[in-house]
Image (cartoon, rainbow, N blue to C red; front, side, top):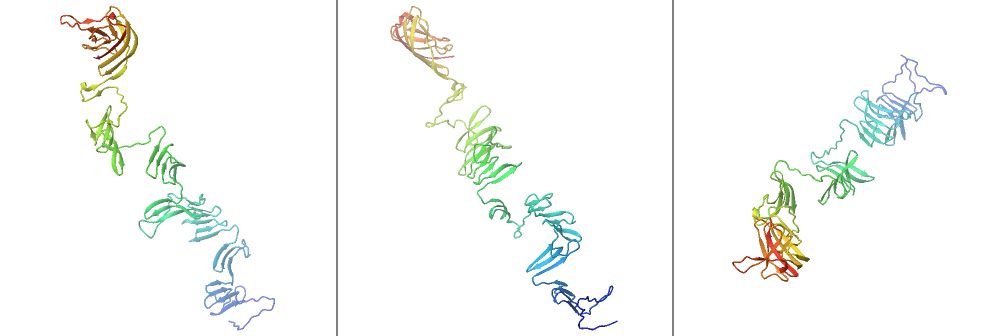
Length: 476
């Protein structure tokens, strides 16, 4: 073995110094440091380190520059310029990783599989465990993030079999506080989340919270705190339901029901009404299918059966204890198609008719002429008729005097009499009589003799003047 010990080897100017030949190995003694051009390349054989730009490398390979340090990987495709290939850079306190090729991507992997790709256009893909399908994707051109999709259509697009987002408050196990804040510009408009264990949908502006189905609004909470279902305005005039923040409920439905209340199984209250927390009235069902409307236990009510309206009080039918109207609160008119039982419930207590009207007196015989009917009225209460007349008359003949036209026929086996007032003629004590099954009046005067019958007046026994008469009789 040859050995050469020299301090310096200086090649002739303009020539190349070659140490060794092809296939030779050049070894440097252990502990020997090799320095090329001071700080260009330094080999620290004692620590097995190489420094480029430094004679005190701190790692196996250290690149150093006073201001800006680059490490480049280049090939025949990339070129060898300062802006070619793959480069690592450190500048000041910042570190950079560059792929300067315009069509080049950056790929990161483990175990021989892709884990991440940064495309030349800025898109970023994170791959699932096989390294074949991107599952977390950043679309740089649209500034959208996709999870489970590489074509995000919104700022955050999640595509999965059952997609969900989990927010965990790791400070507590219950009564969590977690939320998604919604901002407009620099101000928070609202949030959706949990506060002390309560689920909250919170709007911080005077706007609506809206809910929709089939791409159509179905419900909203407006800026005043009113709940609107099936409508968008807080009014009674259009279909929908409003529960106003003050407690008022408005329901409107065109050509159909506006409310349904259903009690199952037992009889009892269906709707209760309160005043200051105390029950003041109820609507419900009793006796299986009878509706009742009732006040509280000390107030009146009604039950509606198949064909009757019945007084109702304190959850039961009330007999002869309730009034309709009062001395200072009267009912104006009552229209009855049947009768009215007064003072009892028997047939004798039934008032089945009341009628007022006029009638037209006629001359059935007697030859007189009625020149004027000043009035001729009647009142019928049940089967009792009271008829009055005030006539102007003249003439007369020898036939029996009879005035007809009574408004109702006199009942069988019924007779009625009353004094007649003839302005002229006639006799003292003359009276008229209505006979059974007739509608006319006959006029008589007593004989004043127990052995002589009464005398019936004829037409010429009354003079020209007036005739006033009233009679009450029973009709059929």
